[in-house]
Structures are given as C-alpha cells and as structure tokens.
Amino acid sequence: MDKIRIRGGQPLRGSIQISGAKNAALPLLAASLLTDETLTLRNLPHLDDIATMTHLLAQHGTEVSMAGDHPGGGHMGHVLDLRTAKVSRTEAPYDIVRKMRASVLVLGPLLARCHQARVSLPGGCAIGTRPVDMHMRGLAALGAEIALDDGYIAARAPGGLRGGVVVFPRVSVGATENLLMAAALAKGETVLENAAREPEVGDLANCLNRMGARIEGIGTDTLRIQGVTRLSGADYTVLPDRIETATFAIGAAITGGDLTLLGGRPELIEAAVASLGQANVGIEPVAGGIRVFRNGTGVASVDVTTEPYPGFPTDLQAQMMALMSVADGAAMITETIFENRFMHVPELVRMGADITVKGATAMVRGSTGLHGAPVMATDLRASVSLVLAGLAAEGETVVNRVYHLDRGYERLEEKLMGCGADIARLIE
Ligand code: EPZ
Image: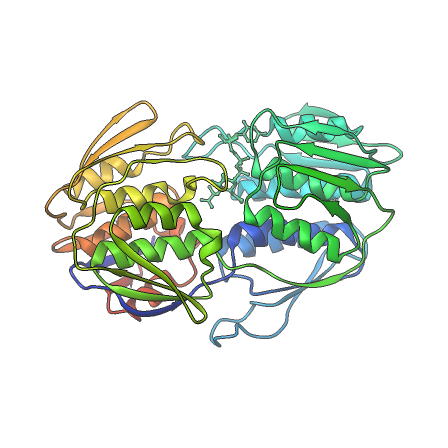
C-alpha cells in the first residue's frame, strides 16, 4: 500500500493548477445514462473515483472513450465521450457500489430511462452511516415502487416516472442530484424543496438543461423541473474543484507560503475565504485564479461550524482543523453534517496537536509547532489534513493508506512538490 513521506518546514510557493471537481464529475458521468446520444465531459479530474464510475457505467452499456488531453498536458483522460445507445443492464452490483458510494447516483437515471433499476445499497463509510432514505422516498414521490431486497434497492416505475413534490427533511447533495436526473424525464412537473445548493448540483442542472432538460431555480433551494420525453447529448466542462482550491489555500496558510491557485474561483468558496480572512490569511483574486499568502502575522484562531452550501463545507473541516492546530489561540470546530467526521483528530494529536472532542465539537488549542509522525489516513479529507499538518510539522511524517487521497486529489504530491514541498510517494 502506497505511503506519502513529507519532511515539513518548506513554505509552499508558486502556482497550482486546480482540477475539475470530483463531486461534480460523478453525477455528470451518471447523467450520460439519460440519453442515447454522446455526452462529452471536459476538465475531468484523473482520479480513482472517476475510473470507478466509468467502470460502473460500462457495465450498464455505456461506451466510454478518452478524447483529448488535460489542458496542461500530462495525464490522459481529461475529456471523456460517453454514449449509452442502449442500457444493457439495470443492476449496479455490490462489488462496485461498495467501492464508491456515489455509485448510487445511477439509480435516478436508470429509473428515468429504463423504468427499473436494482442498485446495491452503498453501505456506510468511515465518516458515517450514509443512509439513502431520502433518495428512495424522493423517487417514490415520483411514482417509483421501491423495495429493499437482499441489500439492494429494487425500484420500478411501470409506465415511467411522473412529476411530484419532494420536500427534503434535510439538505442532501446526492438525493437532490438523483431526483434532478429522475425528474428530467418524468411526465409533468417536479418541485424539489430544501434542495442542495452546492455548486456541483448547479453544474449537473446546467448540463441537464444543455441536454434539453427544463430546470429552473438553479442555485436556490427550490428546483422546478418540467419533464421532457427525451434528452440529447451535450458537450460540458466540469467546474473547478472548490474543495481542492480551499485545501491548497490552507496549504499556503499553514506553511507560511504564497500560492496562486490557477482556475480557482473565489465565489465558490466564500465561507472558507471569510474564515481564512479572519485567521489573518491573505486571499485575493488574481488573473486566472486566487492568490493565498500569509500576511506576516501569525494564524489567528477562528471558530467554524460546517453547514450545507453556502456555509462552511464539511469537506474542508479536517483541513481547517490542521490549520487551527498551529494557530495562536483556541478554536471551536463543530461538524453538523456527518456523525463521525473527527477521525483525523487522534492522528493530528499524535503530531502534537492539542484537540479535545466533545460530541460534534472539537476544541483546538493552537500549539507552537507540530512534529512529524507516522499517521493513518481514514477518509479522503482526513488524509489531506494529515498531509497539510506534515507540511508544517518539524521532521518527517509518513501518511499510510494514501489510496484514500488518490480518490479525491489528482497528483497531490506532484502539485505540492512543484511548489517546494519535500514530499514523495513511497511505493510499497
Ligand atoms: C456529497 O455526499 C459529497 N459526495 C460529500 O463529499 C460531501 O461531504 C457531502 O455531499 C456533503 O456536502 C459527493 O458529492 C460524491 P449528503 P452525499 O446526501 O451526497 C444524510 C468527499 O469527501 N443523508 O448531502 O452522500 C447523510 O448521512 C465526500 O468528497 C441521509 O440521512 O451527502 C449526511 O449526514 C464526502 N439520508 C447528510 O445527510 C439520505 O438519503 C448530508 O449528506 C441522504 C443523506
């Protein structure tokens, strides 16, 4: 199992190209099931999760071909042509779904197009039980018959889905995305209330409209969809990854560096920009991206509570905790989205951080310095918080189980090495 070794103390200086957003790319890939024409997706990140999703689609009958290169050269596959002339299989098997929960995003499209689907329950993961009850209840409101059968969601909609009103009891990115794709081909009007407003949901809605869907209210918490009888192909470019952008912004802050994040869009990370500004981190828009730097003073402690967009993103909570571990005071970090998203705490504590967890809140008392240690990655964002801490720590840090990282960060060590980090991947 690969590891990443970091020798801390080098300020990150230079520029980093931000990749396309993983959490936009995954639903966009699933949307290719909705049409028998070609959907071309550009600026796709080169990640294990993208490969898993294309593998899942291929077993449903989607032809996937790589076209073109990443704008910055190097890795292949940043442009994919996807064509599902015919859905050959409406089952998403456990052995694929268990590897990536986002596989559940084929449920809505398969139901919409084929009027049936059998999708393995994704199961939980390290950060929580991750139920999909809102996906199922929402699709039932559009006329689907949903049953649980041997760990699978067995769904059918003889005669097709029909429009309906869905009020989500809590904000769910995935449920909103599944319902958007299902409603696009349902008969009549669907209204989604308390819908997720994440930019990745907006990216999906914009792409669906380019495919001929009729979705209004994009960016708001009420989405209105007039179903259409068919969708066409389209050519769509995935938006930049706001979590990667903010992760590297914290990298500049925690190492006392100065980074230009090319392709980063400040309007997608307003809550993070506000918190980092309060922490004395300099952030300014520059041509083609965002510049992040330390403005000479120490990092100030800032309280953070994670919330659905446009609040502070839960996917940035672990990274912010690493930064607060070297700040000059005490910060309270409250996680409201997932029930178990503090697994990075014991690993940061092993590096010298002073963190006390009580329920959903962690009290982080900034310390003078972290020291390197062998640490264990447990989930995607916890992993990257350990890398950030290692960049600032005195001495050597080895992060184990970096397969978590490869799921969500494209060529992380290359990007950091290019900005002066002493970082290497140890191939086991
Ligand atoms: C998406 O997950 C992201 N993944 C997550 O990013 C992100 O943390 C999360 O949204 C919140 O922003 C992708 O987009 C692929 P939710 P999703 O449905 O859709 C509960 C990363 O690191 N819930 O918004 O699964 C759920 O348990 C990943 O890139 C139900 O109870 O998240 C959670 O507590 C991690 N029933 C809360 O809602 C449901 O039917 C929000 O979950 C659905 C969700």
